[in-house]
Length: 423
Image 1 (spheres, one colour):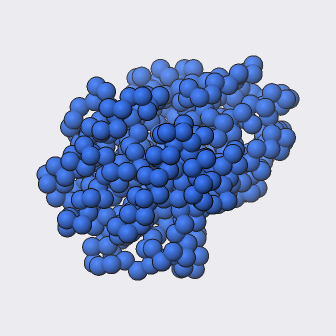
Image 2 (image 1 turned 90 degrees about the vertical axis):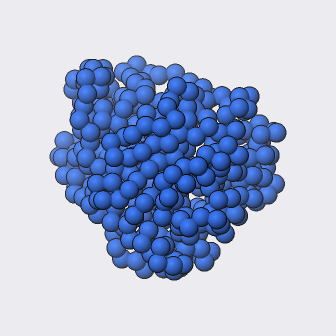
């Protein structure tokens, strides 16, 4: 099959979705498919390059010209078709002639005007709550949202983005989420929580839950080897992800401050300008590490801590840590609650509860047999998320869309035994 991935960001940008898309592109190429990627062109990046067998096309976006709207290092795709991106996608589609266009975030909405004229089938992975939430997070006033409502979303969006930009983003997402629902041939949410949060359950829309997977870690180059020298030599607790309050980093730091006899805590991810935490003693912040170095840190840690307070759609760092043979302490929220089996592959705590998180970390520090037992089962849990188990499900999903209109999966996923075993 000829497959075009459309994703906001791709390597060298570092993040969970970037890793997922790159891994899927390479796995599909390795299985004989013709794979290309369309992504946003950042400053200094080439318009075209090759990542092994995968061809990378980078697009200019009209949104990038509105510099006042962006305070981040990255230019984010808007929730509406971007004029320049749509023109670029038309050009790329003419070159690549895809049978499948596989979208991964809002940049794929720039394909919506092209879809009716295209022979390609359009599938959309849902890594966030993009169909139902203009913030993508389903968070409202610091807590999980109970559901969208027009004025509620306007207030929330204005608070998050600013009054003018927030209203535009909320209205744009409302209109083009509706267009997405009409146009996409098959939705592929990464978890049951993502399906529910995006309103797919009972909607009649065609979808299939396909979780993320773990590929073999790439070899460590000399720069990654140098980064690893910053890690503590003995035991340490590890956090991987954005250093933000939504990820529960403030809860983690509060819990760690009063953790008696604690080893070092390593925060591994990227910082954001909207919040800069005060780090307690024995906490190390390391930023912008490549995935190969992150995977090695996961192998060396005592345990991973994933304290998110927002309903994480999946939790890529969890299955990576499982694959590294280490246990996880995670919040019982979103997709993470289904990945970690309480007392078997890790420990689950209520989101935002520093006292319970502290107790869970203490139990890991004080019971070597518990850690060994959880680590052993974590390795077994990772087997469900190997590429050889998951990638064929994407191939079958593509094939079904090419055969004709997909059967609605909305009312049947709870009865799908194979899927439930992977959730």
